[in-house]
Image (cartoon, rainbow, N blue to C red; front, side):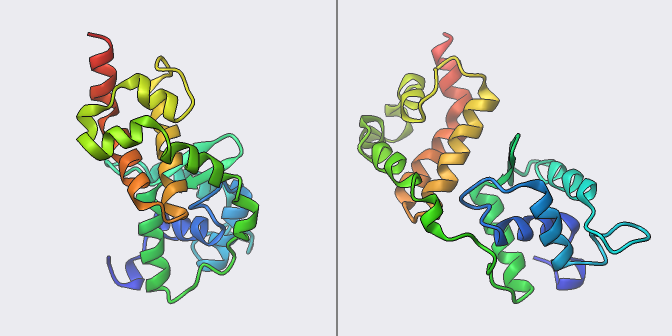
Length: 195
């Protein structure tokens, strides 16, 4: 990554999202704007007043997924980091010599653990461990993330990325790798289903 002087707006916004626990839960856009303003007050303020610029943060996070990146998941309630987004944000925070101190207590997110345990005991996960992605079909994957096989691809992919981030947050690395591969392989699985 580039020296501190060239950290971009997207990098600061991703770092703000991580500091607020956006690697494991959805964070409200207003909270992200306030945190981005704390990290880089001159870059995330109104032109004439020292207030957090909500619209700038919204646009910057919208642009975060352009040019082939997939760093942010969108939700009506706010934003959440993908695994790749969390890695990039952590690198920015390290460059800024900051700690993700504003993160919420993990006890608030422990409802994730039953979902992860269910996924780890799912037959599709075991088949993947034995035979890779070729042993998985779209019906397996839909059952794993509790949606229909006919769910629109973007929504299906977002569900997978959400669970991948959740697994990575709880250090279920093998499960996160499986779900990440499934998200990457989703177009092929959908195409096979429609043959």
